[in-house]
Length: 328
Image 1: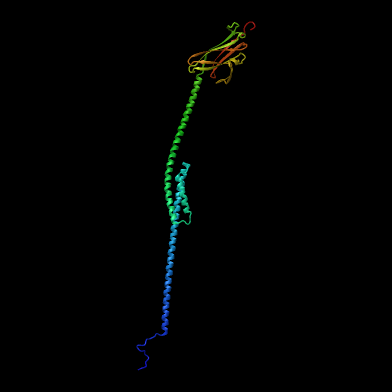
Image 2: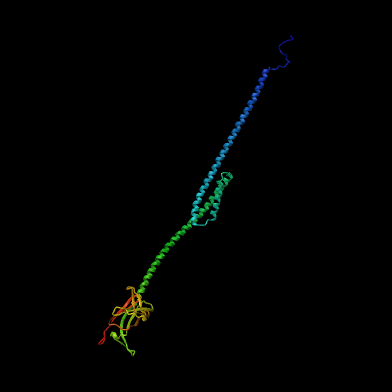
């Protein structure tokens, strides 16, 4: 049969239009899905990368802060140590040493880095190194401080010993001075002369130049006082004897020509004396002394003679002058 509904073997078969449209759509959907998945994958990867970078920056920031805090803590410890050492050292020596000046320079550099909020890791590393150097210098300073402290303690001990020795010496000197003064006082008192053989002779001086002893008051021209002085420890040399002549009326005869005046005695205060008699004494001997007392008219009664040396009374005597003649 020539006409049939079946195609021949050589004629190609074309799919229906509806099948082509469905295949194109499926391909487009696949491509879109693949693109969407790729975009999502990239976004997920990119987000993951950002998260890792943020985490790394956070870790780095934490590490940086931790390192900065650690360096600050190290520096604070070093400053405390420095204050302790230099405080003691400055008490021992007023002028700053070269070592202390170097330490202060390092302190300034370290503070500058730590006060910089934008300091880099390299700068913090430098600060750590400076702190290590600072600690080494502090160790040296501490050794020097210990040496100075030892020397200061030794000086203090020596000064204490010297002060004690000085006090002992001063006490000994004071004792020696006291003993010396006491000895000098003893020698001074001991060197006071003693007067013996005291004689008071009333004398009448005649016109022919002769002298006659008399006890008649109106005829007496002078009283001759004589005595012997002696002292075994008194050194040879001049010595002054003071003679006080008290008349019967109780008044001391004043003889300006004989060097009369006032004498301060050791036990009786100030006393008026009639004459000062210089004596040239030779140690270990007895010296005879004689001195005339002149007055215009002698009274009746007792004349008291007192002899002083070195502020002490060393002898005394009394001579009585009488009323003489018919009209005596």
